[in-house]
Image (cartoon, rainbow over all chains, first blue to last red; front, top):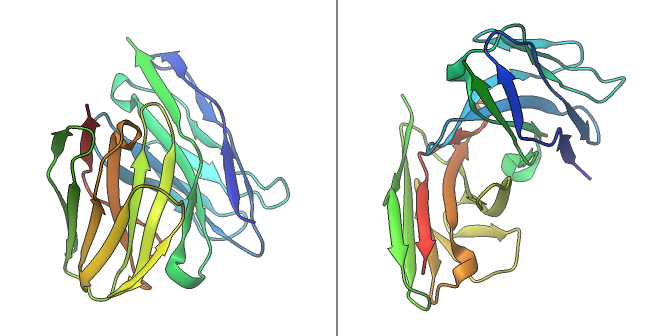
Length: 113
Length: 112
């Protein structure tokens, strides 16, 4: 089946620290991979995505590379800011009936000044 | 452009009362629609999805039901709420043109 496993949180970092949130997936075929971000009290917003192996998604200083050999899509940022405090979700989809998405459990990030 | 609306934004209901949450999408036709629940400190749980009017697939047996009376309207209901129904309910959509899901702002439901 299809599933996503992501790093347990919560994660607390100081401003300007390096961030890595691990995400691995299980899927048949060739899924598309996503990172979504949820700010407090809001819905989810797409942060970045990659649709094929070796693609790198990037946005707002965040990056993630689709690694088929390790079935991973780790999220990284070189220097986090207080405004990056949020919950981050890794997800995958395959173009089947209903275009179902499979989400990880989310990782809460708090950045302190 | 496409937009997705959910209401109400917050709701406090007593145990045993009925529930109706509404989600509407604008700017697209025949979207796939989804209801998720996010319990406090937990991830997203897919509750229902729909690929067309009157077509509902349930992912988890529970106290809730969903309906899609119109192409861009998705309703989540319950006849009698339980304490465990408390959570943050998110509606989402996608279609064949966009390889991503778009989420609404969510409804915070508290059952007392």
